[in-house]
Image 1 (cartoon, rainbow, N blue to C red):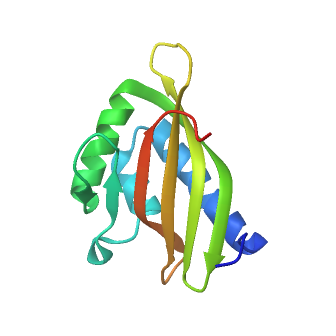
Image 2: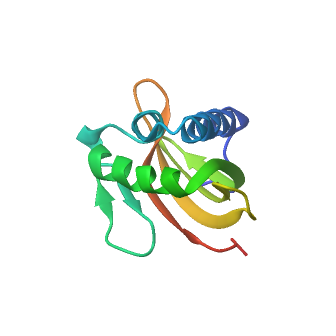
Image 3: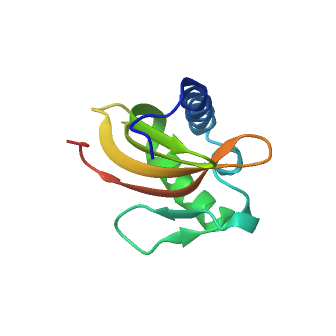
Length: 133
């Protein structure tokens, strides 16, 4: 796999991340999952690092509903994106703003992206609290 992704794929991932942020700010977990992850037929997998992996839109939506109950905003900051063929991966940071104020909470994540019929979407996602480096 090349050391970096083509600019076109980086832009698609940025656009998807912007949509993730907008859906998070709107408090719409179902739209966030629908617009960011592959379809249920492809079994999207998410691990928040502190429990079992979640498979499918329903369980992933419930996870993000919990996050949206505690945080008002998410900010995705890409660090490394590599791609080859129909797969890409991203190693990045996310910063969540607590409801009611306070310092942002930093998460690190690794997302595997898959080319789908309409665009690229996340196939698997692992995230955990703390800085990337």
